[in-house]
Length: 125
Image (cartoon, rainbow, N blue to C red; front, side, top):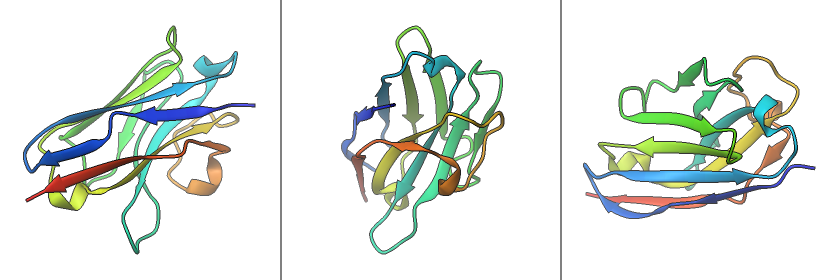
């Protein structure tokens, strides 16, 4: 069983920054593909960023490319999402997700077996 706990959300003005963290349980965290998704009110959950187990590869949604950075520390069983130049349209509930069987970064929610409860990010204009 894998448990994921997100933290770091909050209220920030447009142009500001936030750093989200996701602490994971599980003995083989280092082998999981990890990703961040988000869901705004009335919208479907969407892929934001993903990272392979070795951090060798990352992949971003076009909407956040150049502003967000995903990273992981396998020794701490933690994945991060550094969000800079935030925009009001980034407002959403942000979820951490683990793909324990995959070997490549995938963008569909159905590919991820474990999810956190989410952390709210609100960007004011």
